[in-house]
Length: 254
Length: 288
Image (cartoon, rainbow over all chains, first blue to last red; front, side, top):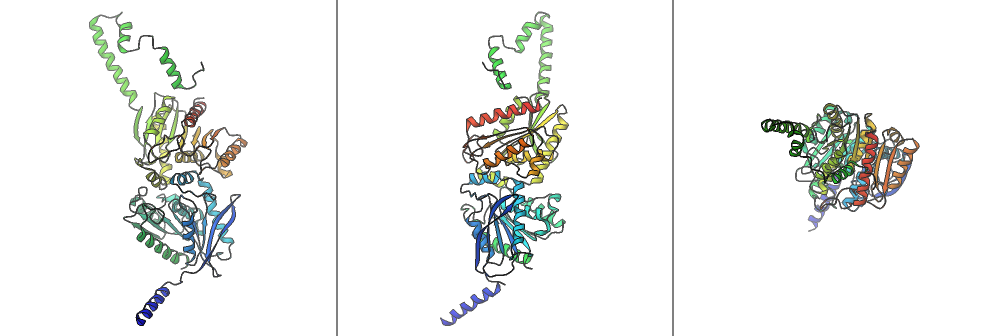
């Protein structure tokens, strides 16, 4: 019994040391900064331990900056990042798909682009993130805007994770993307055909970008969000998150 | 009685007036015109010829009148035109796709005398439920949308050379694309958006030079009324022509008839007011 317990503990310790940096305690707060003349707020999470960390701009789904997104920001911060989860909807959060759709539809695209640039500028004012690499990640609508962040901010964004968001096959649109890209998609997504994703990969590779694609064959849209009761697939969600962490580690900390 | 403002009203009035006269049928025309001049044999021959000519004319005029056409971008569009008219409207559907309701709106505008071209931004897909609409919409590639819209303008230029003015009109998602198009194309005589995202940066607002029509829902969670009011004021300050109306306490999609698994925010009174305003606006800026 004693031996098996110590073996278990040793294995546990071994497992922890496999991760270069064990998940750390985090702190978070709501911050306010200027974007296009307006005051906007965002959720900021980072490790409790003082230091310099790479930063990530996190972009919510069509629901808005809700608790799930904040949890994801905390989870990413625990891996050693300064995470700024932006609020494109100006504090509005939808709980019904109808409201979510209306919010997504109504948000001016030019304002989104301004918000993303302002988020980067804000990160640069933080001692913890100043001069460090910056990435972007988003789901659904936020996935589309994660790519937009890479397009709008060019070489300032080193890594961009797009979880089932709108992609592009347009050379001109993609020419400003300098980030490495990780794309996570569901094979049963009714809006994004696999061929469209592959064409996106081809265009980015032709432009010399590093691209990693993962298509989960049995997953539909929004499979990473546990609140999506009909479509959440736990195993795929966990795998996708592990890939996201590995990708950021390679691109932002490497 | 009030003067009829719209063509459909004028037609209704005309129909009412002509009820007591003998109906204008082929037979009546023959009776009154032909019978007095020709004998029975010539009449039969002429009647045959007449029928042939009428059918040929009918076929020729009905061919381009209502059909789905291919665009050079690889997309398709629904075209509806009643006769050779001098003004056109490029119509962009909402997030539910180019469905029967959207086509019926185009038919309505065609009856008002516009050559209608509704671009199928979803390229053949018509969502079967709210979530599918969402999945398709949030994945729609911007470059493909731009290419399809531009191809629609090329199609009009090539196939309807008599057209002098073209407007772009869109609902919801399509309204957002309509405004974007008006910002980047110089050949747009008017732009109409209905519960669609506006632009907010000063640089883009200044780029709106075409007369603008807008209908918004006062309780649209996604489109803040205060921002719409500000948008309207800025256009006014810039000296632009704009008819922007906010319908109080209505929600997004108030023009679309409610349907199971789709939207349920329809408001008939506002929908018909918004539609009449749109027809008035298009008539003013396309047919003047």
